[in-house]
Length: 382
Image 1 (cartoon, rainbow, N blue to C red):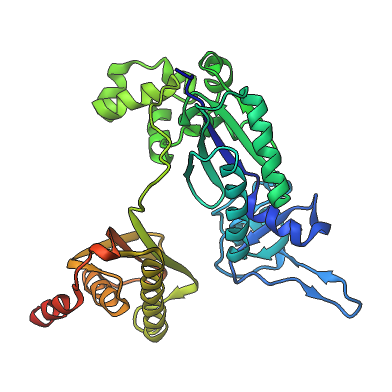
Image 2: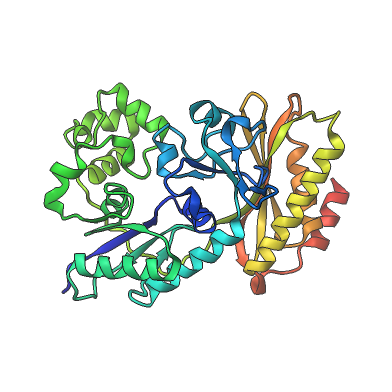
């Protein structure tokens, strides 16, 4: 039986790298890609491109991604653009172009699939690849995949190949950019244990803080931790998982076909909106999000039975509410009615920073029955 070999491929600074294909003169410069509200480059009278600087930005956008030259200054994705401007005011600011990113995502995945078709799609810029049935040495097939991606897109990627998804996910970040990392179980003490414990996918900020409170800072610390102590603080199931991953053990298969658990749309406002004074604007955003969510559901061939609402207030408190329909829907008015039921369950006492809607408990459209008439009757009775 062939040894298990799983690769994790992560495109290097993907969104920013796509932008550099369009603006090659910016290679080597600190570049930040922000939301769609970021100003686009302009041409001056002699045809020279003029770029906005991050230090001149004023608004509520967030960093979508940044080049490695900008990351040196501490600018990372999901950071507020105003905070990023304080760290790297000289950086170039570009608007995001998600249509272009989806195009290049399709190109790199198609190139990989021509070599190794057993792929698990993990997002627009990363995939897992099952290489267990391939006879080529790991380094050879890794280089072949990397070359195919570059030919197809003009972009670089980083790949790690190991016995499982856990180690490959960690490994693909070790030698970025343009890295190729081969890991075996024997490499764990030297290459994995010195890393911070939050490098393990699944250990978030809260768990990281709780582990730090126990004096556990590195993956090696976690591997040597007292099982009883972990069980007392996290419970048996989580403690067992923590010890397993700290020793690099992971039996999860590469899922070549997966169904989404939910589909959502949300927006962060340029300024906090008042529930009463800005009611018209909030209503317009709310209706548009429901229409977009309905279009996403229909485009992907799904209906949702549970509709969710997400609100983030000006104090950064986030609340969610869900409402389950008698049957699944992909109808915008039906989604809007359900989302309004959720909205009535939230006290609107502060300005609103973010608004989102979500559909879960998804069904293939062909499986769903007409639920909207029933739901309309139900609302009438309430």
